[in-house]
Amino acid sequence: MKVGIVKGPAENPYEFRFITPDSKALKVGEFVYYVHEGKKVLCRITKRLPLRHYPDIYLSNPDVEPGRILKVLGLSSREYDLFEMRATILGYYSRELGFVNPRIPPKPGQAVFLAEKDVIEEALLRKKKGELGSIHAGFLLNRDEDIPIVLDTSLTVSEHLAILAGTGSGKSYLAGVIVEELLKPYNRASVLIFDPHGEYHTLKEVEGLDEFSEGSYRPSVKIYGREDIKLRVSELDYDEIVNLLPNLTEKMEATLSRIYRDLSERGNFTSGDIIARIEEMKNNEELAESTASGLIWRIRRYLLEMEIIDDYRHMSLKDLLKPGQASVLQLTEMNDLEQEILVSALMKRILKARINAEKGLDGEKLDYPVFVIVEEAHRFASRDSRSYDVLRTILSEGRKFGVGVCLISQRPSKIDSDILSQCMTQIVMRIVNPADQENIRKSVESIGREMIEELPGLTKGQAIVAGVAVNTPVLMRARKRHTSHGGASKNAPEEWIRWSEKGESRGIFVDRKARLFWDED
Ligand SMILES: Nc1ncnc2c1ncn2[C@@H]1O[C@H](COP(=O)(O)OP(=O)(O)OP(=O)(O)O)[C@@H](O)[C@H]1O
Image: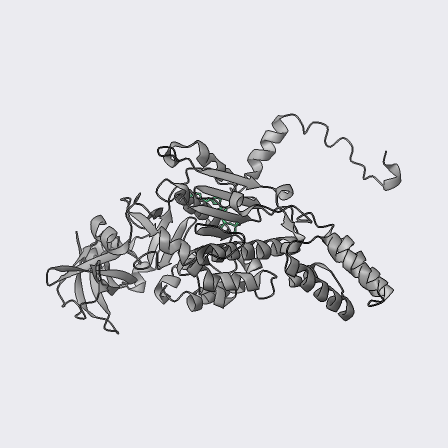
């Protein structure tokens, strides 16, 4: 479909301007093309400017439509119905070379066409919907026709993914879509989810849905609650143990460091082993009574009191991570310290197990790549977080060993920029906060300035997808979930009414007297 005519070049050589009537309803982000030597040269619309404004006097009376004034004056409304569009030339697409820019802008007078479904699918996407190793995340925005937006699974997971947006824009809904896709028969991924708000348990529904099974394949989703999540004392780093024990004196730290070094060389150890060593040092008069008792008290009070820390039990990595399985670690009842220590210790163990498997080393092994989703990533990937060092290492080295990470955050400006810039696929949804927009502009180079300007205007579920998993940034609306969304907003009035209809409200206002504690039964 012809949608406009080229007016001429713009300020820079890879842009041009064209004129289109309003009736063609072209929007920023839309894909168009012109023909050069028989090839369709794909372009993205970056700006839409009205060509002529109505004289102010035509707009002076809100009750009189400007078109009527034109009619009375015998003028045509069509000349006010025109828009000048800017478009960036992406090039014609070659499977081998990617986008090839012809380096000759279109001539004035040349026709501009709306890119058809097959042109978009061929040029923008590396994978077709349902193909082996594909993620059907949504549909091209601004089109009535459903043009699927499909990501390349391999690049999405191994080169890390970031989903960034203001709160309530649909991040975890979309992450759910991505996990669903990863569990489909054409991916059968091994996924781990750190879920601080308990939003992912509903993914268990996939186990009963036909879309997810093929032959003998059926995915599984395991939910780990607080009582199932355990770290062994001996799998904690020295720094992690120190972080758990408050107000250690220099002498206590030095003692603990020595004991930790000795015990960790032997393999597994328990908190009882640490305490026994401290007592031994005290009895040998290597340690003052007050230091020894202070250290033992802290170990008993803080290390042993922590529910996620155990002397013997820990989660088996082989149970936690399996192809065709998503494991959801619910962190809802843990405090920040426990959550950070858990992310740090478990991620370290996963990376080590992958390195062991890849290099044929001794020790715990994981024989397949894994994908880890970290919700509220700003809490775990900011410089002052206890899990910062591990995440930084995994983000920079994980791809070599098949540990992919998806960071999800509503405060991208709080995520360390070295970490964020390692996420090679970015999905950015509505962001209104200017500091966060600026941070996205700096750390997500593949999204141009004109696309960043679109961010505040997006609505729930709409996103810019950019980076290695697609050939060029594209505007998308997320597809519908097969499973329900565990993070769905509460409908308060509905719940109030349901509650009151059950009769539970009766009598609630009878006792209006404030009770003092000595009045209580
Ligand atoms: N694509 C979508 N289609 C339909 N509903 C959606 C879509 N995306 C999000 N929603 C709904 O919008 C609400 C917020 O979505 P979601 O929980 O994914 O937001 P969020 O960005 O993760 O928010 P928060 O930062 O608070 O966790 C939910 O009720 C969800 O069901």
